[in-house]
Image (cartoon, rainbow, N blue to C red; front, top):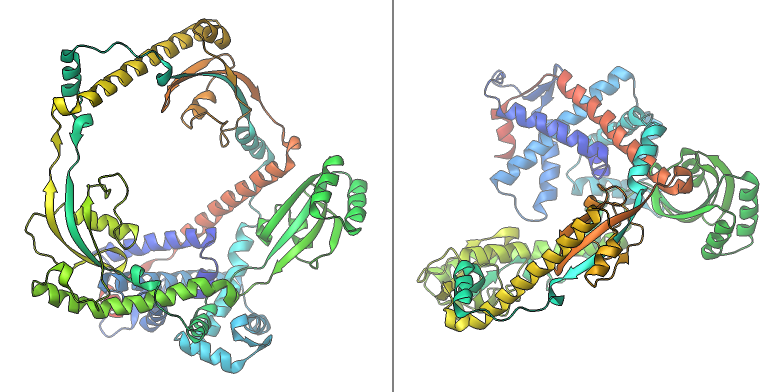
Amino acid sequence: MLYWVRQLKGSWIARVFSVLMMLAFIGWGASSALPMLAGGTTAVAHIGGQSVDITTVQAEYQTEYNQASQKGQPDLAARQQIAQAALGTVLRNQAISMEETKLGVVAPDTALRAQIDGIPAFQTNGVFDQAKFASILQQNSLSADRFLKLERDNLKNVQLLPALTAGAGPPQALVDQVFSFITQSRTAETVDVPASSQTPPPAPSDAVLQRYWKNHPVQFTSAEFRTAKIVVLSPQVLAAKEPVSDQQLNDLYAQTSATQSVPASRSVEVITTPDPAEAGKLKLLWQAGPDWTRMQAAAAKANASAVALDHAQANQIPSQALSTAVFAANQGDVVGPVQGDLGYYVFKVTDVVAAGAPPLAQLAPQLKAQIQLQEAQAQVAKDVDNVQDALAGQTPLDQLPGNLDLAAVEGTLDANGNTQDGTPAPIPGGAKLHDAIVKAIFAAHMGDPAQLTAGPDGGYFAFTLDSINAPSLQPYDQVKTQVLAAWTQDQMAREAETKAASMLAEVNGGRTLAQAAAAQGYQVSTTPPMTRSQPAGGITPQMVPVLFSLKPGQATMLQTSTGFTVAALTKITLPKPADDPQDEASISQSLTKSLQDDVAESFLGGLQARDNVRVDPKLFAQIYQ
């Protein structure tokens, strides 16, 4: 089951199933009324009247623990989470297995053998290698019997849920409604009334400015700044400097490749036409050698659609007939016409990726980063005690030994982590560690001794405060120029709002926007057609839903970062599905996936409700403590 979950961990099936079973597990663990099993039992749980032996959960836990420990040794809370995930995996496996038994789903030995022989990690020169098989299982703490059971369960699992959800699909009426909602476009006339274009008012009296200064203290209050010395001990900082050998990469690839699998995918160029004769002509033309750009042009002349799919999996191709043909074709062949849901297809497969583990070249960057991080974490673990000892001896931060792998920085920053010139303070480490350090600095007091503090992502930090500049309302005489500028800007914004509101009232009173704008000396612009997901240039995201709520001729007004915009809806365009079969097919596929999610969720929820699950919390705790 572990392998099935890993192979499908990005799919909707895994997400739905994991959420349902984890919610169930949380409920089981939280109940104080759970029946306790008799002393001496090895059954850590019962599901559907069947016991779950603790050794099965421990084996799953060990596999997950080994994976997690590659990024550092998990603490008690992390080990408990790993154990919960392991138990959830075993329970999922058993629930599905019981249902498969009831339904008669089986995995023949021949299919199991073919499945294992086809795993690239177990092959040498394309042939199954027994020695490599045994070595990889040992590296992953897996016995041959357990691995074979996992693979057999995997074969049965992929027969059940996809078959259960394959028939789910949306009615055409729903597809048409969603298509109309998504593809509907609207055109509007707009007038921008920027505040900067208004005539500045005369300077007011000093009393008016002082009143404005008192009524807007936030605008004229200086931020609190703190000056600190900071040292950081971070795996992220050290990782980039760690060397990685080819042997380390190969060893880690051997460990991880057996547990990583990607489904088969193909890149394909497809031309779709409702006319079989036209499809035949396009095929002959394509076989003559034109490239994809020329074929797209030929398709446009023939009123056919052309689309390229990049490494699409079988279930990501909108037509079942097309999907079957694509995965049966050879790379480079021009195939067709193939009759499908949207017409006749002619296509060419441009790339083929077989199912199985990704090649080393593809995984090398992330494997290298993983090794570097592991090495850096080990180095940080060695340095922590020495840094703590040095700080306990009251060694100043700027006199700490240079062999402790510390990164040091000194400077002044505000509570947002910015320097006095507004740029982010260059604190070493990732963003989370940066934020934790800033938060700690602004919670500290002058004179606090430096202490090594554990931060996010396995990092540590220590600091001392040198000075605190508290926030304060700046004296009026010092900021009088800024007060005048702010007051003037505020008055100009009010003038812009008054003019925009006047235009809006005139349009809603029966005049056109052009007439209302001309009366105040403004020009009208017409937007290109826009959809809900693709606003026109110059239209703010806040304006889009408002425009899609108006009727033609109605107007609206919104404040922008520069002033105000008045917009009047002029046209609504409603495309028909026949005008864009590609979009319609995409919408249909998305709706089909959503309905399949619902079917799978209902099925798995039914299994959860049907099978009475009991967990022995004391026996379970032995797994991770």
